[in-house]
Image (cartoon, rainbow, N blue to C red; front, side):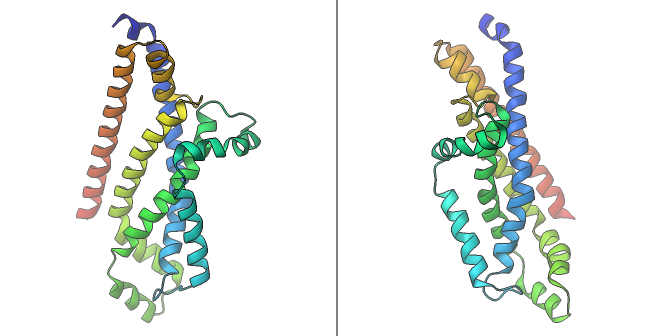
Length: 219
């Protein structure tokens, strides 16, 4: 207990570093992964913007990134991270690899959410002469928003786990604290504390994600 009190300032800082890393990556996934997922859906066979070349190209890039384990992706992107931020240490640096991992992950989830929409609704909109942007804005996104929110929750939870991995090589956050104080100093109390903190964080994210998704789906 005494060791926890001693590192309480570092524990608070690590917690907010984790939130920062996950928040940046989640925002990037939403801004880039969501449009990419919608693009995969609307360019599929039988959909109003069918384009085999675009779909196969985007799908191949997504599958390529997703096939690389995060730890390897993290190390592979270190030169790019250094070029971008002039450093490879800290939560901002870790956010680069987290964002790259989050984009294809959420893109596939967004595509799956869009596939749950009744195609008859989309076909009716096309027959009525609605523009592609209007169909995406007024039909696809509103009809799939519950699935998109659930997918965002899943992405956030995965990113929390990834952020702990990033901490093992100087990314900061709870993972970094667990390694420096819990593992290297053989302090099981601190190790258990960081694990419990991660569990609580995941449970809170899951609860609020489910709550918002249910609230949206009732409307």
